[in-house]
Length: 167
Image (cartoon, rainbow, N blue to C red; front, side, top):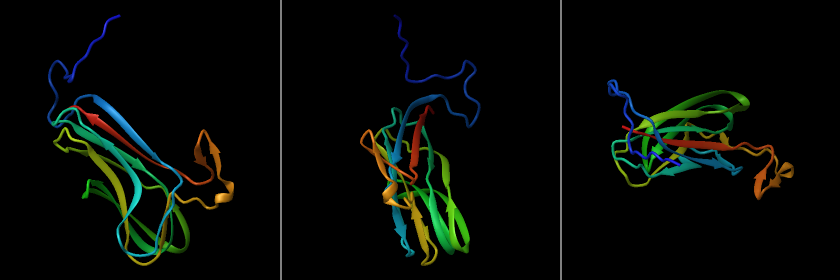
């Protein structure tokens, strides 16, 4: 059986300006039913994070993250995508009701970390006023069950996928 190994594939005529090559590796993290609730204005960690070690320093990392949240009250929510402790992308939602509202924020961003060391990406959130925000909310623990050692139930899960794209 034959095997072809390479660390970079570029089309015969080269890459067009601003384009990247193929996918080198993919990693993902699926956040369980942990609930984070905030009624203050401090930035807090959602617990949704993922780490990748790029094979090449000129690679880019395509980050795709999604999660759920419910909120009550009229306020802005800023969700931040962070590389380490640095904000690299922001997604904002606005809630204008006195009832509970469900949201399903998601982010997609192409980052250039310029390293071959491990890089951790994570999502944080900040509420503009003292109203209630809950992420990956589990409405009741009485409906939770365990399947193959993992907690399941009516709550939702957040997912982060990192793809290393050749430079």
